[in-house]
Amino acid sequence: MRRLIPLALPLTLAGLVLAGCAVTAQPAASPSASSLSAESSVESSVQSAAEVDTTIATAAAELLEANADGTVVNDDEWDIADAETVTLSGSTASSDSASVRIDGSTVTITAAGVYRLTGTLDGQVVVSAPDDAQVVLVLDGATIESTSGAAIQIVTADDVAINLAAGSTNTVTAATSADADASAAIYADSDLTLSGSGALTVTDTGNDGISATDDLAIIGGTITVDAADDTLRGKDSLVVKDGTLTLTAGGDALKSDQTDDATQGYVWIAGGTVTATSTDDGIDAQTDAVVTGGTVSIAAEGDGIHSEVALAIAGGDVTVSQSYEGLESADIRIAGGTTRVTSSDDGINASGSSTSTGGGMGGGGMQDTGETVTISAGTLIVDADGDGLDSNGSITMTGGDVTVYGPTAQNNGALDSNGGIDVSGGTLVAIGSSGMAESPDESSAQGWLAATVSGSAGSTVQITDASGSVIAEYTAQKTFATVVFSSSAITDGQSYNVTVDGTATSVTAGVAVAGGMGMGGGGRP
Image (tube, rainbow, N blue to C red; front, side):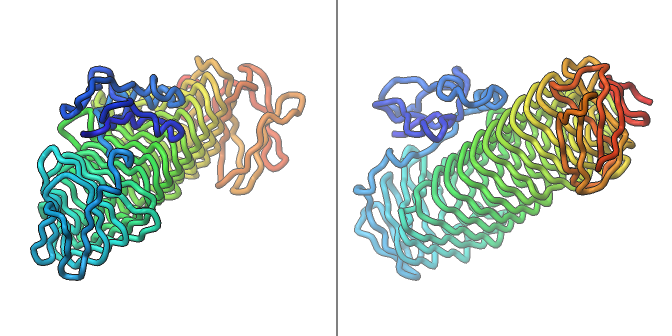
């Protein structure tokens, strides 16, 4: 039987389960989607994200609640004492288990149970068990290398777990192809969970590293994956709850790409440490990308985090040190945690909404096409060569601390929206170029100021009130020509000084800079 665990649990509550039953692993689905597995013999219910973990901000919780259940096999669902040993010995293997079939260098597991694999195999481990079987593979000093197809392939089973034994070092290597039936070093036509406290190194020189056609969950282990294409791929969902992951991808590092169900195709980082380097996107979700905890470090040649529907960061520590566009989705929500973004184009880009009919500048003009950037809490630091905060729709800020450095080019702006910028809380500073400079709307509840002032990387920028008291101070990261600032300390109509390296410029709060692209704040020039 399976245990259905609400994955929305914070790490401190990770041990909380519904007693007496095998319950489903679920990213806080809506009540209509919450149900027990057909195999369960005990009736119960699964709590929503809000009921289980009130620390998850609403901005992220409502996305998790809208998604389908994701399955995980937890370590307390099986006992290592029940394990049957499979000894790998070069081009063959041995086992006393009647459920293990050995044909040359192919080891096939045919029934539910726990199997401990140790030794070295130049071949393949296959799971071909009944459709309702739960199979646990405990890697305990195992090295498996395949020159023809996946090294570990789950052909049939219900739920499969790969557990990394404490203190063990394990290696899985393959050279799969994109058109193969199993196109990853570890490939599962089932739900797949990786757990434990040991180490695993996975290499695939032909295609993906670890791939599951259903749900892929990482709940422990020190895992290093180097793949020609995607490193981690859960078609229905990819959830990281714990573990230390080091990922090097020729394609996307973390990916979920289910296109047939709007409640699937999501990536959720709830904990752990993820370090990813990718030729394409760091995180790529067909629907939602959600970060509620953990430490995430990305160096991507494509987007840092990309999702087609919504992207929420509500906790944890996220650093995108290199990207084309840092965070990109139609609906971007910053609701907690600390996020640092460096990009060669837009830092935060809200584009591609399903309500769009023409897109932004490159798609048919400057009309508001419905995309949103919403900032309610947390710290966001953006260093962009393109637009800093960019929305083909609107930008709304109700809280948090946002700092934007750049761009330097006149055809981009630190703030850029088609539908206006509304600020009612938090602290916002945008230090960038002047050609496309935009200010918050005049209707914004919180005061703001804008100044045409110039400086270079390392310049000190101070905001002071009429009495000379310092409200805020920043060190510029690059050349700039304008400063936009908003905080609860600013009152519309009052005079303030923006001082750069000792040279003060007086401004009146609520007046946009001349020659910029201010929306409601100062109107177009």
